[in-house]
Image 1 (cartoon, chains in turn blue, orange):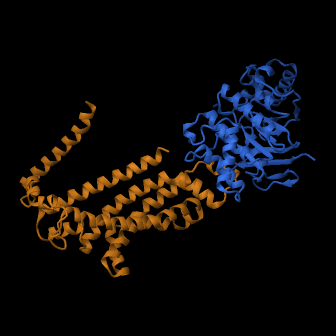
Image 2 (cartoon, rainbow over the protein chains, first blue to last red; image 1 turned 180 degrees about the vertical axis):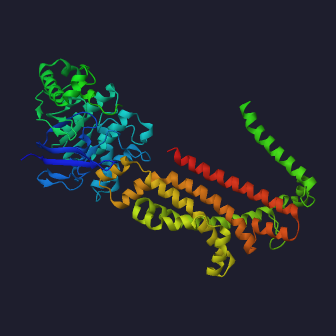
Length: 286
Length: 253
């Protein structure tokens, strides 16, 4: 039995004009314990909604989500979440932001122990000398490191990542990505991760499985694509490796096929940084 | 040059105002000129802490009485208004229940609340506090409510994914996120409280700047009315600036 089991999820939102807008239809997904799965798709395709449902932040209209054999009915105590926009509290220091998570997860723990645990988490992402700085005094990359430290500080079994590197510049992105890989592999217990992203490169770099999200509305999931590439991986190495090229082509082909008519109207541009079919379906540009 | 203009322009404005005052005093026989006002009221300013009688006291003492009364009434209003604002902010149901009532009570003048306070409490001092609190708490309620509603979804998400308890969410997220709005409310409330004090002292005859103003009017000493008016204005301005500084500090976070 898979660790995360999603079966037949559908979700609609009521639009402003009274109509119902279907976002997800009959979405099913299995993620094995300890695996890193990425859901890749265009912006506005319903990825975030799906992730919120998996994490228990939003409830589905129909279908079910189970983690570790238990039906999800709200945020699990062993789950952590990293948001695209850091979501740190600006009035607290980096240390206090992380300690808040530790304290909420282990209320019985003495305050000094909570602080020590938070400090260790921040030291692991190389922020040992920025403990007492507030988010406003940190760069984007450092803020996202604090958010990642906060997620790992509670020793989670499940990790949900909502475009965690989307707001970072390319250079910073890669170092923070490597931080994440290191934390995932050095965690005390296997961490099962679901990430959503619109970058195929990022998905190949980090994942064991890539699940293409086929735009709707309502959106559906394509068949999972296995990424059997040796670790550690690096962006430079993946650019040339043949297996990586296969995976990339497979993912892009699935996404473009789903785009259908829309893709044919516009030329597909094979850009290194932004992958064309994804960029084509972008409804809101950054 | 910029610094000079910074001081120059307000000085010129003040000078023009004094000129208009002086011109008006030539036309209206009862209105004392700026110079006569100073001559007749300098004893209050130069000996600010002397107590000659019940309302015949140095201006600093009178201001002190008024400020103490305002502080009590304002604090009472803040102590009631802040939790009410939080409640309105988090509960649309409660807002719908009480919003019409609040909209009706808000425009009622302090002069109307004061007699009700006298009926309720039988004494002038608590009636004055009642009037100040009732009139000054609206901006606190409304701004606190708006502050809670303006909390970005991100912060609510943090509370959800960290599974923060209600108490922790309130203390670590809702209060800090609302604080700048609360202080805007406090600043506006304090301004209103200071407006109300004069009216309530005039009606109840209690010692203070407003009480002094009313007594000197009844004694036909018009220079002292002007002294009281200038004092009220200056103190109100200083209070607003002090609250503004506190607010700016909070917004800087």
